[in-house]
Image (cartoon, rainbow, N blue to C red; front, side, top):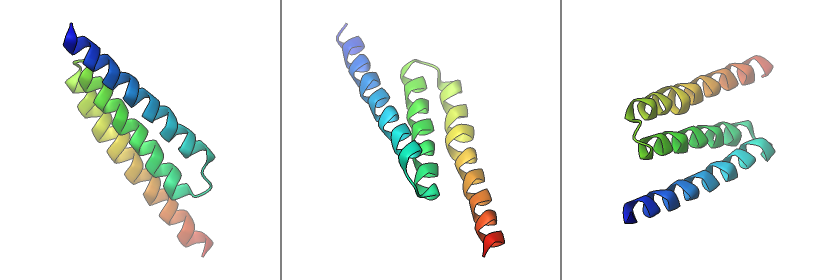
Length: 85
């Protein structure tokens, strides 16, 4: 019972951090900061999946959602900056 309360508090804390980072991603004017904030939201989601005993989903979210998507966003941002320069 005590572990369930601890997991619930951690999950709520991570959920609040996810919402804060999502708001940062939406309201920020710099694209690089918005991309990083979106990647952090995905990373927090993978931690939540791990807390909910879904390690396969957590690994997929961390690799694809946080890692690969963020890398692709930065690649495209770099290509756009080169074309406009």
